[in-house]
Amino acid sequence: MSVSQAFSLSDDELALLPSDDDVEHYARHGWYLTKKLFTDDEVDELVAASERFYAGERSRTLPIRPPRLAYWDPSHGDVQRHHDYVHYESDPIARILRKPLIGAVAARLAKADEIRVFQSTLIYKPPIVGEPSNVVPWHFDRHYWSPCTSENMLTAFIPFHDCGEEMGTITMVDGSHRWEEILRDDTTTKHFAERDRNDLEVMLAENAAYNHVEVVKVPMVIPKGHMSFHHCRTYHGSGPNRSDKPRRAVSFHLQDGANEYRRFELSTGDVVTYNHDVLVRRTEDGRPDYSDPEYCPVLWRTP
Image (cartoon, rainbow, N blue to C red; front, side, top):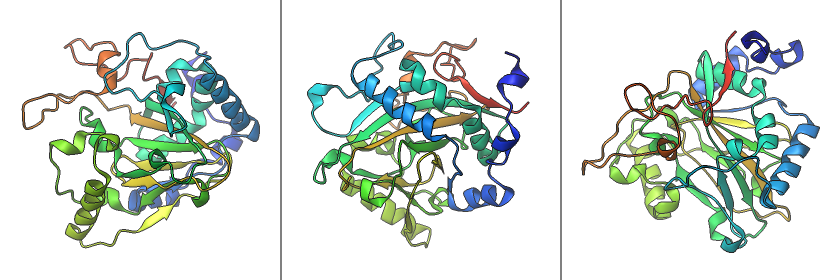
């Protein structure tokens, strides 16, 4: 398949891209709700493929286990399930996630000529109101991507069904990607699962106060086949699943073509690493290559 064939859209798909007003909205607010990008059949296949994945089906497995891999197994019980690298381990899921239209939407929002996969996490939030793991505290993704050079990375939240507040949908803090950040220290590079939720609440409130703004929380009400995108510096989180059905989704982290690895040191001199760093190939100068097509395939390139 030629490059032009691989990265092209039909007239119907072109009509689904963000408009100029949508791109401006994303720039102002830090989030965007898409039109219907997946057919019902594609979403239903994501559900079916995820069930086969949970039953043990793998197209391949990671050659080594990265140090901070999120990877549920049945021994963990009925908690919120996270599986990183699902785009690598499941070809049926990857075929749908890598639909060129998804990358083209991301490219419009990020104003980039190329979009690559950075990470993907399969998520299952069980319908248990009091399950603590179902509540995702306020955070933004850029903190965990300190070894990246790009400030334009973004995430698509892709539910496998209608998804609203009752199910604990993703919720954005409006415009927070434009805040000047304070209180940054070594702890901000730690994943939210490794931090005290109260500390994260305080961090959000104090950053908002420093920027002289109110914290405006916007729950994403997402119909089946639609998805949300958010900027890598947009604070977001999610609440409990109060419905009688599991909340199924993929968090699809994307990088623009200019993104590269950079050495990022803590105040202790320790170097921050990302899980990719033990998996991807190396560049000529010995750095982890965040364009490795095995783990970070190109999703869209402007023809």
